[in-house]
Length: 148
Length: 142
Image 1 (cartoon, rainbow over the protein chains, first blue to last red):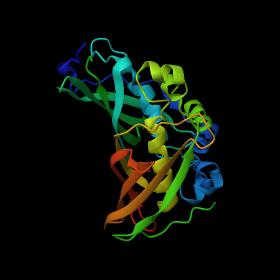
Image 2: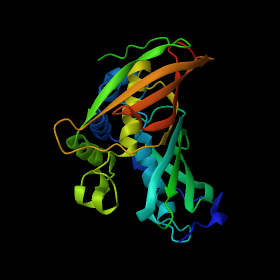
Image 3: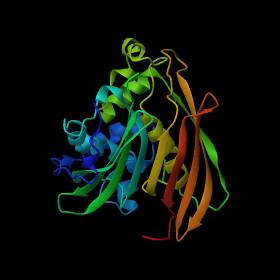
């Protein structure tokens, strides 16, 4: 099944809010061995000027992945997830994700391309607080391997 | 571990960071990230889809390189971060697992923001390409 190129520019409705928990951040930081105090101790994070414990940079990808699932699950867009390989990943931050943030993601299809029999899909997910404060932009480029 | 931040200078080589990744780490990352794709923990499934073995999550590898960046530049300093995944990291089911080495060079410093070019290898082979981070320098910008 081929990707539908007419989806470029298509924006999906906002995701349900993701409430960022302090313990979830600690769990994620521990899983990647990131032991800076700002990832686990609210006082250390506040001393840096943040509202609460901050997340390591790629934690935003966990939230964005959930928010972009709506695109991957859209049969009209046509992603065959059994053939997907993660190609590129990119983040731009207004500020780190903080415990207590309630983040909504809006997923936009930025690129749809077929080259050498493989499909390429880039999604851009804008993460912002429910109050509308932009926090991070997350790009994921997936390669959908062609039939062997 | 306090947040001691260094002022980065152009051309500076940042101290290489070495991270060992075992199957247990993949399981822990799966739980923490919510990515339970079985190619990251099941030999049977990995073989069925034609992989040489269980492989690390690309996002785990990216997270480890990001850990190096926050170690060098401080937690909360990162303003941009991007990578291309070029080679899977096979993690054997033994005590040694796989060893990932992250090194960095400060490519530019502009208006209080430093660009770090990252080299990330496993067994001497590059596993990420175009790996770059931008970090805000302490005392400048916000």
